[in-house]
Image (cartoon, rainbow, N blue to C red; front, side):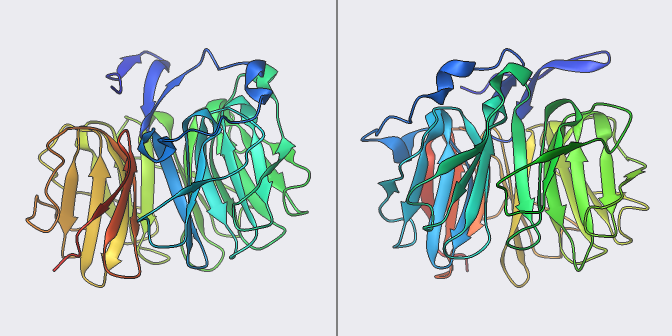
Length: 324
């Protein structure tokens, strides 16, 4: 089970990240070993996923990377050179992509996720990476614990550390929002915005002091923020001001996805699934997506081309029926 969140002044000693426990006692250098091929890997903890063309690529515990060419009906485990918990994946196209995780590992694939190689690995730093995003095939960013911010201009072959704030808040998610605009959702209410593609960053006033774990940009100005204790806020002016969205749950919210025009799905721990049909201005439970009776945590939802939704979380990967 995913542990509860405990907050202490100045720092979260033990804190929930989307779909996983982040403990600052890292896994250590032993994770340089290759990931073990596991018969039931698709039922293990899975954290994030992305599309490589029509292929699905998902990542999770023990270095597991799985690919599916039939919309998640069946899975094949990829060859991965580490056993670190992988927290995020970004695919540039049907061939090239990157995954990040604990031990500050960054992996690169050039064959659609079938095989991966290490391009960054720093277990002694004890700062896991939590998200990765690329603007194009060469320019990208990876973010993580204690203000960890890395950038690359050569497709992820080499990485340079940067500081975007004097505070070392954990940077949990990086979100694109229109041409050149990016947001970062972070610890202790930290929200950052860049209007020049990641060159300069400005800290925004936050409507809530608890941690943000995810965000969804509806366009360059409309943004949903999701975090601890069912916290959800909406901005219509690029994060300059916020309106609270009443969720009626205390479950930590981990993400949101546009299932189809006019339908958003919000995910969370404790099996939380919330639906919005008005662009995130309100959410509710809905017959289209009922909360999981198992109460297992959901880390990510992906909208599939056939109208279904793929959930990732403590239960592994699970396809939901088409939404009406």
